[in-house]
Amino acid sequence: GAVVSQHPSRVICKSGTSVKIECRSLDFQATTMFWYRQFPKKSLMLMATSNEGSKATYEQGVEKDKFLINHASLTLSTLTVTSAHPEDSSFYICSARSDRVGETQYFGPGTRLLVL
Amino acid sequence: GQQVMQIPQYQHVQEGEDFTTYCNSSTTLSNIQWYKQRPGGHPVFLIQLVKSGEVKKQKRLTFQFGEAKKNSSLHITATQTTDVGTYFCAGPRTTDSWGKLQFGAGTQVVVTP
Image 1 (cartoon, chains in turn orange, red):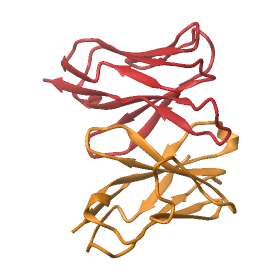
Image 2 (cartoon, rainbow over the protein chains, first blue to last red; image 1 turned 135 degrees about the vertical axis):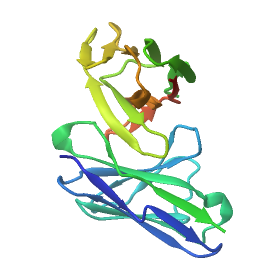
Image 3 (cartoon, helix red, strand yellow; image 1 turned 90 degrees about the vertical axis):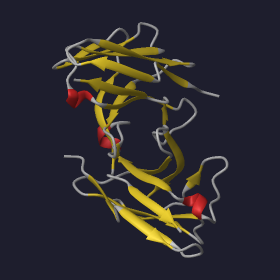
Image 4 (cartoon, rainbow over the protein chains, first blue to last red; image 1 turned 90 degrees about the horizontal axis):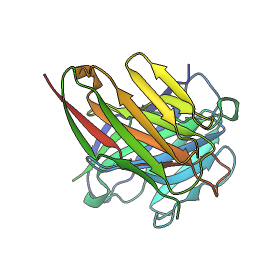
């Protein structure tokens, strides 16, 4: 149980375009979903927290107009990187948790974004 | 602000040897969680410790939560090549109610055959 999928797994795009990443909880309803960014050999940096039906809350320093998050249902959250630039290239990982399983977060497989 | 620190940052281990990685929080935690991330992969939940002084074992992995609930350790015996990866500890952010976690920087484990 507690499987989280992410799509796409890898994306290459041109500078200035927007990229949407989907995160789905496959076998449970996620009360909350989290979006992280991870640089090579570094820890997970929380970008934002999203709850179904409400606006996402962003961590300090994360531009909400740059990283649009939508949590349309209890099983789906999307992250859109708008007007992507090479410095946005990174590994983006989502995680999901349910009130029913406490504070454990289950991570998706991640999306590697390369902006040319 | 709340900090979770892990040492060592890197751990080179000979196959068959034991090692321990440590996690220290600046605040008292309600629980602590451990995750493993294989090279090129994503973090995978290993275990959660809740009680003061709790010790849990998963085969060759032994997890311990300190009496003051501010530190934790992961001890691996008879290291195997499958243990390669980065081990993260994480604790709930004390000022948050949405289940946000504060991750440590991780211990990257390299196993030499």
